[in-house]
Length: 190
Image (cartoon, rainbow, N blue to C red; front, side):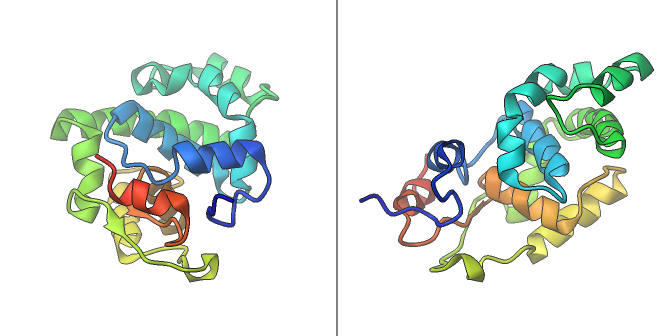
């Protein structure tokens, strides 16, 4: 039997996400923006809720194309607020639109969002060695620093807990448990 982290339980969508995406280092700006958006929407909700609506989010938010989202107007905002396929939270939708503009500004200033965001872990995945889920922290000094810097740039829904979840998703940290079959795969990912 394959040993994996405890959190996916028996949910097939969560298992697929765990087995194929979670913790794999991401250097594609669009994918990084997707995780930033999805983790912001996750605030106060479960990750399975977000995964179940992920395809709807992709459609509603132009496949996470920040340049397109930055041009969303009041009509588009109203359409999103009436879209039952996504989380219809006005503050989070507004934050996504504003964050897309700041994301583009960061890309323009630094050449890529990837270059900016990976600086918080000195350009390489932080490898943790947790044996139980209870050991995994909700934040870290890196997520604290990331949150502070993002907030200073004007980003919303980027508290340290959200940033840590983003870091886990985008592979800035490897929080697979050491006995999970993905631990070594993600640690040695090239």
